[in-house]
Amino acid sequence: MALAVRVIACLDVDNGRVVKGVNFANLADAGDPVELAARYDAEGIDELTFLDVSASKEGRGTMLDVVRRTADQVFIPLTVGGGVRSEDDVDELLRAGADKVSINTSAIARPELIRELSERFGAQCIVLSVDARRAAQQPSGFEVTTHGGTRSAELDAMEWARLGAELGAGEILLNSMDGDGTKAGFDTELIEKVRAVVDVPVIASGGAGSAAHFPPAVAAGADAVLAASVFHFGTVAVAEVKNALSDAGFEVR
Image 1: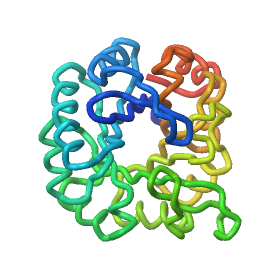
Image 2: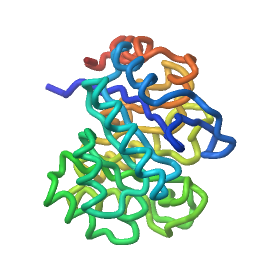
Image 3: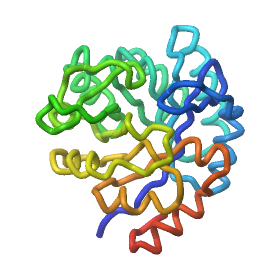
Image 4: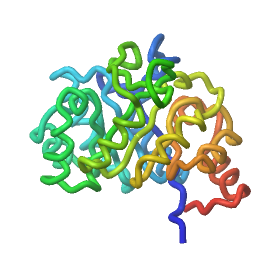
C-alpha cells in the first residue's frame, strides 16, 4: 500500500523571524516561527521545514534557539536547513531537536559530504535540497542553482538528484526556482523527471497557490508537498489541501 502523502509547511527563518518573498526577494515578515509551528501543529500539518535564510554564524545560534523552542512546543517531524556545512552542524541541530537536516550548497561543493552524513547519522536524517530551474543547455532541461536561485551550479538537476540519492540522501527536497512564490502551481514536469531517476521520497516545493495545485504534484510523483506563503498568510488551509488530495484519491494522514 502506498504511504500517505505528507503535507509540509516551510518556514524561512531570518534572524529569528519567519519571512517570505517571491523568488527569494522582497522578504516580508510572516511571524514568530514557534507560534507559527504551534498553529500548524494544531491545524494538522504532517511536518515542518525550517530554512535559515541568513545562515551566518550568528544565524546558526539564532536557529538553534528557534529549533529548541519549537521542539519543546510541537511533536511533529522537524527538518532544518541553511548553512549546514559539516557533521558538527548536523550534530548540533539534531541535538537541538531537529529530526532531519537539509543540505544544499555544501553538498554541491563536496558531494562526498552526503555519504559521510548518511553513514554517521542515517539516511533518514539527511535531506538533499535541490534548487532547480529550466536551462536549455542541460540534458534534462533543468539545472541546479545556488544562492536562492541566483547562480547556476552548472549541474544537470536530474543527474545531481540521482547522485545525491546514490550517495545516501534519504529524501530529495525539490524546489522549483521558476515557481517559487509565484502561486502558479507546482512544476509537474520537473517532479516527473526527478521521480524517474530516484527511488527515495521526493518533496515537491515551489509554486503552490491553491489547494487544487497539490494533487497534480502528487500525481507527477511527489511523496510529499510543501508550501510556505499560502499557509502563512491564510490563503490556503492545511485541511483544504488534505481534502483536495483525498478527493483526488490520495491517502492522507
